[in-house]
Each structure stands twice: as C-alpha cells, then as structure tokens.
Figure 1 (tube, helix red, strand yellow):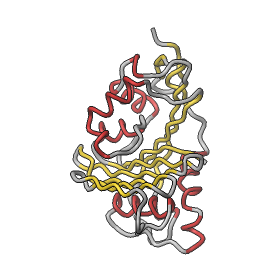
Figure 2: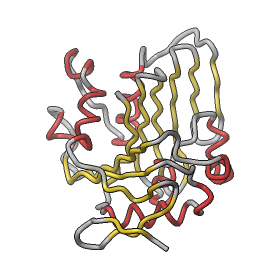
Figure 3: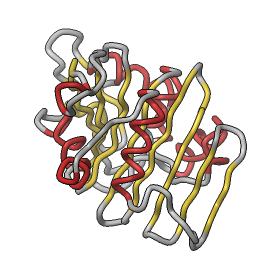
Figure 4: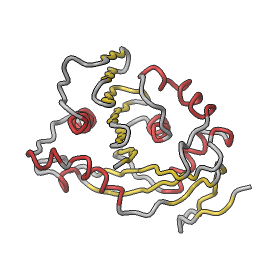
Length: 222
C-alpha cells in the first residue's frame, strides 16, 4: 500500500489543486513519461472515523502517479530550495500543496519503502515533521531543529502506524483515541479516505493539462 495525502480544514477542488501544483513547478520540473493525478475527497470529519474525534470538516487530497517518480531533478531542487531539504525526508510533490496552503497535514506512506512521513504546516511554515524509514532511520523536526537517529535506540511511536497517529495528534491538537484494531488498520483507514475516487489526471507524459472548472475533465495544454 502506498499513498500521499494532504489534509486541511479548507475546501479543495481538482481545479484549485491543479492550479496550485502548476504554480509550484515549471514544465521542466516534471519527469517525462510520467502522469500526475489528483483525488479530492471531503468534506469528512474525524468524528466520522474515530469515536470522540474532532467534529470539524476536513478536505483531503491524494496525489497519484503512473510511470515512475513525478519530479525531475529540477523539480526536487525547487522544493528543496523552498525549505524542504532541511527536514531530511524524501521530496514529494504533495508537500507543495502544504507550502501554498500554509496550514494542514502531509502524509506519505509506503509499504514497499517501509516509509511513514508526516508533516504539520502552520502559518505557511513547517511546524513539525516525523519520518520513520525502514525501521532504521528516524528523523524528527520541530520546525527548526532536525534530529536524525540511524539506527534509533528508542522509537516512542513504536512503528509506522504510530508515526501516522502522531501526525494526526499534532495536526488536530488533540489526541485521537484508537483501540488496538483501529490502530492496526489506521493506514488502511487513511488510504480509504481518498481511495474511492478516480484520479483526475492533471499532467501526462510530463506535460501539464488544463482542468475544466466544472466537470473536472482534463484537456491538453499548449
């Protein structure tokens, strides 16, 4: 299972997400032969998924790709210059949405890479991030100071699922109480939030597409 999501308290649309990503990256930032798609889900409430959860409305965006990594070396360098390189985590285009929105939660999860990464943005700055990679590399950032433990002697969050839970706690500013089964299935629960929608492809073969405002259909861009 793999997913990359951005969660926020502000409404999101396919057209708006496409425009934000397009402003974040130049054409040369996308890798050729790669398609980029987005799914927008919501509104939903944490209380819909977990008892005692927050009643506030949330909108979620997932970024999907076909054909390999989305960003070229130039695209990764652009995000790196925006301040992401210092938190010692893989560069992913979903974080460009958080940089533009200024508030929200980034989640990147991969079984294949044994990776869990979460980041909280507030007031247009990275406020906190945490990454556990392959069980042997733990990276924490409080928005300023980065701590790298390789291998970590102690992981308070225990595992990748604990990393996801810590991200929710940080973003929502309150604990999310899960029983053993809910904790075990947390990655699946998060994946299902955006997993039921069909992606709208906003770039094909490394070229941006224009998205129709109402229908959400994509057409070739000159």
